[in-house]
View: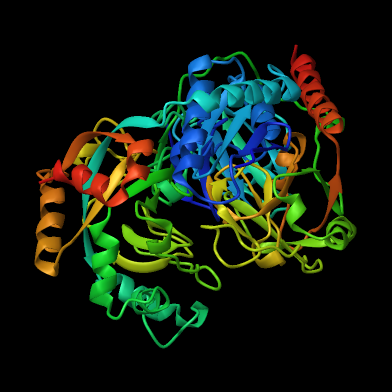
Length: 289
Length: 324
């Protein structure tokens, strides 16, 4: 890992912790952004951790760009002692894979896809060497996922698959982005899964939808009354495949204000995780039983 | 008191100086694309500089006032009319209860700011009244105005009267070609030296896909990438990176073809490389660019960026001082 600093105009500093994605890079980015937040520096207006990088927005009239940079470099020196564990939560997210709405949408944008003759999930299964779509869904929903970034649009989580790199699903983005994606689509691009929080443009492959809103600007959804966006970097997610009947029931529960997502507190230790990924995941998922 | 929307214009939204502090959750700053014009319009009617006003793109709305008010229109050259009688832009004018405010066709610029004494008093959401339409947040019901909407207006300070104006010398718009100063950086190293030259040499044109999220440019040569094995997680296209944060003003070039400069409603991150960032002093100018306008990117250093920033603040100070 080689940290690279760059000015983003006169108001941002962009810090690439590593060119490639890893949880190690994410934890270093999280440590550094937490340190900036704790330092409560005058002039800092936005602190944005991302997958393997982060960004600080600041007012250069209050803190000079070179001082801001020097401060981040100081923080990096302390990051070698960083605690690579995190008190967080694990959340069960129901997914209706191969639903009619993403299917209708993907059929409208076939000419922008690598393989217009199959669906997104059929394509993803094939290029990741799964014999059937069912095997692929099993792989996507069996392992936990780490929310390593929230953004693009309001409240959208980027999720990193918590398996050995050799087993990670990887798919390209659409050749050219779609102008439409159904709200709450579960998508995939590069090595990341995501949930589209709002309807709109998008370039990720579409696998299904969740009945569970993750962004509600009116804060009417029962579990979004405290804040309108559900996800935080560091959240851990477990997808659970559901059928149409369960999907419809969940949607009705959300509307009635009775839907309660399954959420449990957990402590995640990157060092323990790396020692025995499968064993660690098994323990992690036990709290959802 | 309220304003009744008779015709909405093309895309008229409530905007103030924006909503900092939530970009890490994908909720952008929003706010006026031409912040100086918003501040000036507010000063003309005796409001706080950051009061909420209306931002009208390319075409003005028609509004009916239910009470007397002081109004000023700044930014784009779009002449306001009170019951059909033209008024000057960048100049405060009175409107009486029952009168309507409409606009002539756009002459120059892209976005007009319509400030009303007392400000547009929609609810404050996460510290701002600005509309973020993609997230259905803030403004009037989280969306651009529609005919039939009623907008609440706050209490007027009564500090200013009719005929207060911003001197013509202090009204700044983009030149032709528009020159957008930028600081190279971020993933600049991804493109070849030759593409680095052509990017600045070429004259680009604002594409029709230009909105509050970002401005797209086309017409320059396709950029060539330095060969590399793509890092894990980045995706296979040479213009892809592991999804990271996007600075406001950052210039991404998906596939190396059409640069997109992110603006006030920016997507907060994604997987396209960026070759630099338009400096803060020139962000307002982008908001006044019409589609098909020729534009050039001009390389500057950090020192030049900070000097330009100071200049811009000096202009604002001059405008403030001229009102006494």
